[in-house]
Length: 397
Image 1 (cartoon, rainbow, N blue to C red):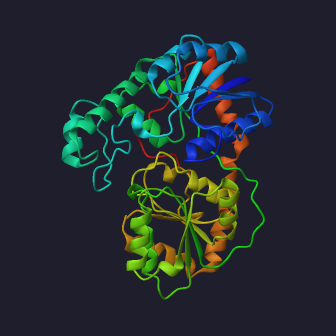
Image 2 (cartoon, rainbow, N blue to C red):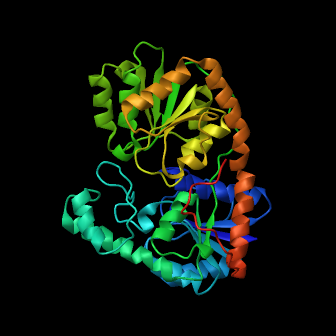
Image 3 (tube, rainbow, N blue to C red):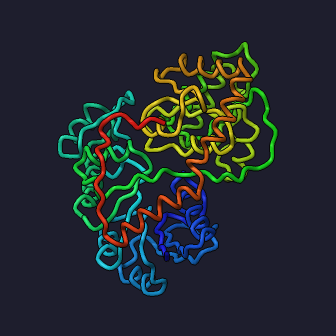
């Protein structure tokens, strides 16, 4: 199948969505399909398939020229700056869109209040009030109005019945249902991690935390958690960057553990893979309800146990007690206690890592491409399938 993907960039950086797009192109090509990539930002290209740069705000006829040049069977959109472009595509060619986050139906993007408690209200005018009352948006009402208007535009997707939708988790599909989407046009396509891991030796006590450094990711809670384990040998390595980094560095210093906490900044996927191999365990202290959590399946692929707060997509890739530990109480004390369990029981930690490597098969790139192609075939043929409501508990692992 000839598949044209629309992404933000043509290289792996700045978040999991870009990695998914770039690696999807590579794996589609490896498995005998013919992908091409349209991207909006940057000059660096990390894919071997045909690429088409398209600047932000480019007129629709430029996109039409790309369609005429590549002649795809189907288009998959991962990055959208305006719905007009999506409508343009859907009127000319079978089109799907992969929703990587909740900004499609929530003006704050996370559907949580100031205390990271989940919100299940559908998008509407009432959000402008609750955004102020719950503290889930910007401090300035004018900024909240701008965000609300943008989300209102994105909600036009609900009316584009010919556009098929892909999400990475049942959690995301529930959010769509709560916002009035027809789930018969929604496919759950869990993401993947490349199993080609680098050689490396596990270092006892090395704890890896890959994350963007913003409060919702909970890195501050993880730092407070390990600070409670001063009696144990450990070293925390934080891979990622963000505006919250200076505050996190000050926190580590104030808690007297700055010599045991290393901030790597943003690293390449290959470099991060080396750290996965060296780590005894991986942390995922995200406070919001994560749409999926690519770190989780990366830990599985590298055969490493993971300690994570529950909620969102986490429960769709974490087998609690088998491949890691799920912490339901989102506090530093509870998170620290879970880390202590694995640090003080190396054999249990190793057994969880071995189980993780087995479970990783579910998230192999070939499995992802297989599910994706089924969805894209439905996109091309216009097939509608009856989807069971995801409002109940997740299916058993």
